[in-house]
Image (cartoon, rainbow, N blue to C red; front, side):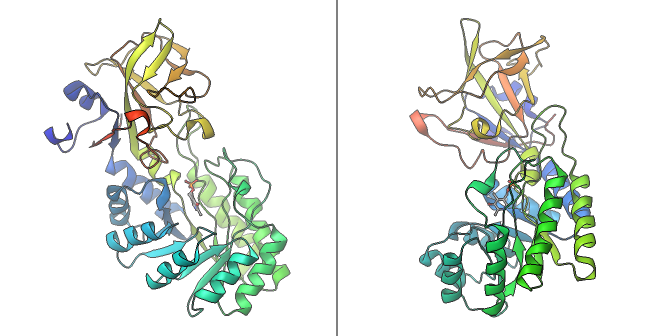
Length: 380
Ligand SMILES: *Cc1c(COP(=O)(O)O)cnc(C)c1O
C-alpha cells in the first residue's frame, strides 16, 4: 500500500485512502529530526542514540543527518549496522555482558568504548581488548525511583563495586569513565541528580578521575495524556549538578537516549477486527506485535479512533478492554484504555508515541505481525 504514495500527509490520510488491513507504523522524519535537535541544543555534552530502541535504517539515517554523531550499540549486528550506515560515528558498546566471540568481533570492528558491571566481565575485557585509547565505563545503579521500569534489576554494580572496577580500569591502562541508566521513561529529573552525586563519590573512593560520565537513556517520551516530557528541565539539572559536584574537574557528559529520541516520531495505526458483544475491542495488533512493551511499561494512552473514512470519532471517552489478534490470553493491554465510546468494527485506532521498542519487538506469533511501514509529514 505504501507504494501508492511515498509521503503521506498524516495517519488519517493513510486510513482514508488505503484502509489498511494490517497494522501500519507511520514514521514522521521531521518529528524525529526536531527531537534530535532538541537534544543536541539542550544536552550539555555528547548525544548518542541507543540503537536497540528502534534500529530502523531510516531512523538511523535521519538521526545522522540531524547531527547525531554517536550510537550506543549492544551487539555485533548493531555495531555492523552503524558502521555501515554512519561510517566514522562513535560506537559505544554498552551492553555490560558479552561473549568472548562478541568481544573479539567488536575489537576487530574498531570499538573503543565499553561498559561493565562486574569484576569477571572486566577481567575478560582486560584480557581481550588492547588498552590503548580505549575507554571502559563501570556501570553503577542506585535504588532510585522515577522511572517506569527499573533497569537496575539486570545491570549495574553497587557504588562500592563500581569504585573497585574504576580503579582496576585505570590500573590496567584504560581510560576510566562511568555510566548509569536511571530506568526507562524516567520523568523525575531528580533521579539523574542522585546518580551524578553518587558518581562523584565513586571517583573519590576509587581515587580516580572519570574522563567521561554517561548519564544513560531513560529520557521520557510523550506516552500519557498530561505527562509531557520536560526534557530541558532534565538537561539543565544534569548540567548544573555535574558542575556543582565536580567543579572545574567535571567529566565530559554523554547521554544515550533511545525512547526519548525515537518514540514520538511514530504512530501506530491498528484496525478494530471486532467489538465483542459491544464490549471488548479486538485489534489487529497487540502485545506480540507493535504494542509489545505495554504490559511492562503501561499503556500508551494517547489514542484516537477514526472511521474508515478517516474521520475522528467524537463520542465521550469510555474505558475498553483491548485484546490483540492472537489466541493467547496474555495478548491484552493492561487494564482498560479510554477511547471514543462510539468505536465500531472496522474503525482504526491510532496510538501516538509508538516508535520505541515496538517495530523491533514485533513477532509473527500465530501468523500475525505483518506490519507495513509508511512515511508521513505529520502525525496529527
Ligand atoms: C536500552 C538502553 C538505553 C536506552 O534506554 P531508553 O530508556 O530507551 O532511553 C541506553 N543505554 C543502554 C545501555 C541501554 O541498554
